[in-house]
Length: 545
Image: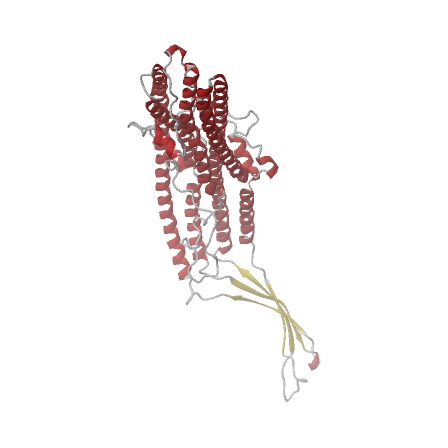
């Protein structure tokens, strides 16, 4: 009989820790999915073309062009998702307070003498760390496959590829020559006829061809500007791909986190069902008095089981949100979203990245936005040369291959002749002063923008590198120092509880702290994985898998 009583009490003691370990995770997974949703559903755009003469601040008030644009810059990466929590070192609140805050009340301990230590069944562990090693379904989607599909099927990327086609059309337009002009006229047409008293004429018929001559090289300068603009747009498109790959990183890690949380929530439901089944079996074997106490315990455990199932529903919802977020980026059909699952472990061994200085050098050499800004300086210089070429307008060559003079009214032979002429503008008033000054100012502005971008990239890489190395240190500290001690402490406290040297409240406080350490371990794994992928985005290369 004493064994039955203590089995009931042990089952109750396991319950708060299970609640603590499992109820936190679905909420955290759903929060992670909601935090990533805004970035996943971003509408990417190329942004202003570096080196162009367009206003960097956008159209001014009252302009006809819309001032709103979709999308936004990626901002500084790394360090923005430091979700790992430090395990508590101070004494936690009593277990009854923790349970009461969650809307539950811990039932009173069943009366009865304590059995011998050897006869006491130890509580089952409230968590299983092997879940963190779960790689997902074998036929699941890997990160590499997700990136490949995004580059091929993402609708935003496919739409932005038309910018390159339009840039090619601009190059073609810039190289077109000005069409020549053909002019025909008739002169000396009399009102009636010419007479000796009122001589005139003879009537003249002209055919004129006017051909514009680009003496200052405006057409070549336009072609150079258009080709540089096309190269800049290509680099901008590569930068959009870099940012969209970062969105895939975020969506994929969110899906991995939601998958782990879903597995833990399912395991929690199974444990609660097993505990409830054990308590019911023990209650049926107990006497009438113990059976009444067991009935109260069964009611309480049934309520807890329903709340755990509710937590499982939240985890399933968070997992579905993560599936939808990744499916938007990959342009998956609606019928395939429900079967989307990640494949890949968070515990894989990863190579050590280069030093911060080497990463900075790589980023300044490989980042497509930096390359686009450098091309923008070349384009700004070409724009300045184009405006100086526009100082001189085209020279119009006039050629009259035939002029026919009708002398028939005077009974004379008609005459044929030709003419040639040249028409050009005198650059006295309009020498394109304003556009030349604007192009020179734009060149200086583009150089300053490149310097500012390089400084931001350096800071971004250092921040991402610092976050990655700190996340690795934090994870090593948890796995090598904190988790082993937590396991040993849990084992000792469990034995002390069985021996009766500590009460249930003190044991519950330790279970609560252990569950928080496990939660910190989960967050530290995700933090390292996200920091690793952020470092790839900051450098602009896939240095880490």
